[in-house]
Amino acid sequence: DPNAQPIDAAQRLFIVLRLDRQCHRFPETARDQAKAMAKELGVEQVDLVTIPWADDSREPSRRVRNQQAEAFLRTWQKGIVPLQDAGFVKNIGVDNLNTWQLERLADSPNCPMPSFHLVKVSPGHGKFDEVRFCQAKSIECIALLSAETGRLAADDGDEGEGVGEGKGGGEAKDEDG
Image (tube, rainbow, N blue to C red):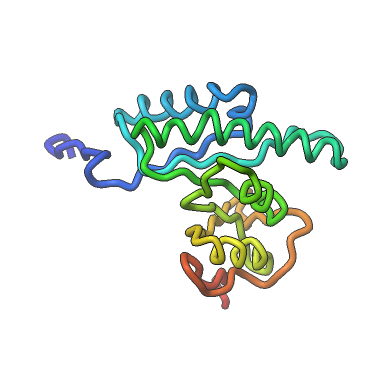
């Protein structure tokens, strides 16, 4: 409608910025990514910024996992938390972390816990351990369903039958269920 008034995004929408894995290159990369995304939306403040784990596609080993944990925690402490402290973002969150990764964050001194956790689920592939962990830490879980090539996407190696009921939960079911 050419006569329609533009939506004031900051007043009517819950704005979530979902950063990509490149945000871990340097702590300021996360800040710059978030600021650029907000500028593109035409807003000065957002409701939630989430970051994924610092997975750099190397062959998993204890050393690589520890390096990834260090990169994630550095980005969290020096890139994401300051955005909240400055009032740019109201809530900070994580994106599809597993229980081990969530525990690394919880065990880190001077690291605030996230407000939200985007949990990628699909029918037949729940994240029961992650949801339970988040519930115990008062982290709101948001089930994220991704459609890829016409099918719901599941992470390799996930087991379960859907997301259990609970805070922010509900059951993930296919159209027949």
